[in-house]
Length: 225
Image (cartoon, rainbow, N blue to C red; front, side):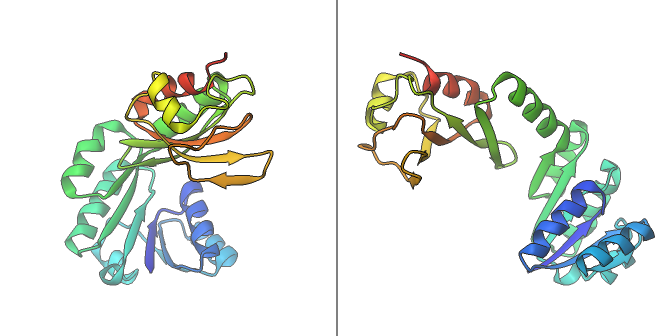
């Protein structure tokens, strides 16, 4: 897989770090020569010093053969321009880190595959850690349409000892919420639940639901006897 990262700031460099660990072929486009030098030194990746909104720079980075372009520059106008050019080269997967919500429709219009809103992610996770410390959001799918989170179940929760089928029939758990996994800390065991799977005390549940249902789902699952 050939990956281009446009923007070597804090988020871009972390992405590069993770993909380097996965042995992916990565090229960085960055306007700051010092950043290019640092990331080359740290990770040994190819770096292109230049503006990712310029066709010649994208070509120098190998845009024609890129499988994925990840755009993390600090300006949405630049990110949008880069995405438009990448589309014209037929890049199959374009991921953009959006700074301002006002650019959402523009990103969708030009065909960006995944749009990550850095402000929403930061605010949501900060509020969640303060207000609901037992809920840990771990992933967002479909441009924010679905969330996956982990929730710790209290020892005296109503659902302890109940099966998945019983929870679905006797609680107010919305049909939009799915318990996709159970980690039993006492047994150090992860299970993919079925209808007859019992919720053990102190379990951690992996739940899939829509963002609007996270709070209500967490409330149902942690409700005490």
